[in-house]
Image 1 (cartoon, rainbow, N blue to C red):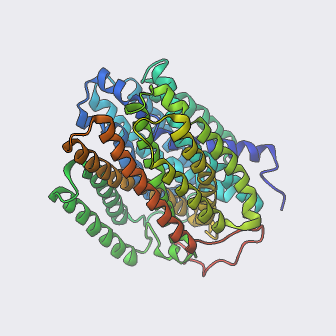
Image 2: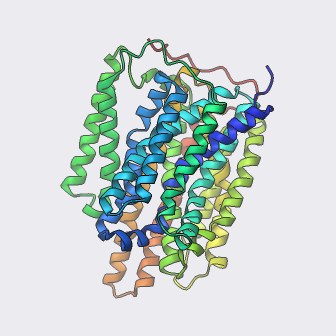
Length: 481
């Protein structure tokens, strides 16, 4: 069978899907350095300001599974178009917002649009490029984009905030979204909806979306209200009850939203769990390093963004190399090795001093971490999609990306609590603000490293796929009825 990736159309299709992925991944971090400007312009309170980044994360993670299943049932191109339109329109509304409520509402809708876009785009990629070298290369590029986007989002946020103003961190999306839609209509073939959509699992959709929304919301709010607060305990318990009810519903439903037989695919659950733990450490690393550079080292938003350029370059290079290495060494060694290298970089960063400098204390650790980030993003994506039948591609993509969003929320919630507690203790002991803040950041970065080490242990159970002749799959999931 001829290589689709070798054709001009194949290359353009891959570039288009990666642009869509970059929009979604970068938008989770692009607003971070613009938050002070947003607060001053729109009158946010300190407490309400957190909903600018958290609102996106909430609906992105909450609707991800629903978006992935909708792509399988209703047609991937159709769902991708709907999500892109929603994303672009809400970005425009956010960029033009005249008050805090409008901006937060736009971010909530933006996250819902991204939850439709991302699993549809990834499932189009895994079905358009045949398993073997084509798919490994395509997933390698996708994984590199995923790794780059979070760091590049901080850089772009700094450039836009210090340049034309904070509104452009939102207004940059609509024109890119329009170009992406033109590309979708030109390059992505219309796919037919599944033969049966009349039995759509509405109870399952309500239960799992409610569970994920409640879980992410509780994790986001936990550092503020306290982990032992009744609100936190009740939220976690409520999410667990909804998830248990969802599993019970899926076992009985004729056309389940999440056919549990998908977990018979060997290594799928391990790959998703690895992603969850690793992302908890990765995303939090960017968060605490940015705070350290701005609040302790005195960097401007633009300087903070530029500080991630070497990391971006490292991820780009290692992701490209890793996509070629999959065929030789397999995905599992790349995942485990990449996580160990990243953990080493995080342990280095956990030693940041109060009187530190970028060249001596930040750059070396981020460079080491970048050598591991590229292989992890590439190989986890490949392992999580190996052996997945075409009619479950959207669901598999949604599971992987939902684990990423829950991991980000979990990591920020846990590590922010650790950092805040340590900083509070140091303040109480009479230490000056830079000392207290740095002590908290060090504690959080050390915990990030431990989570990434734990991910490397789970990764030993992931599927090791490597060659153009894929391993025999586990017993095939039952067909969708």
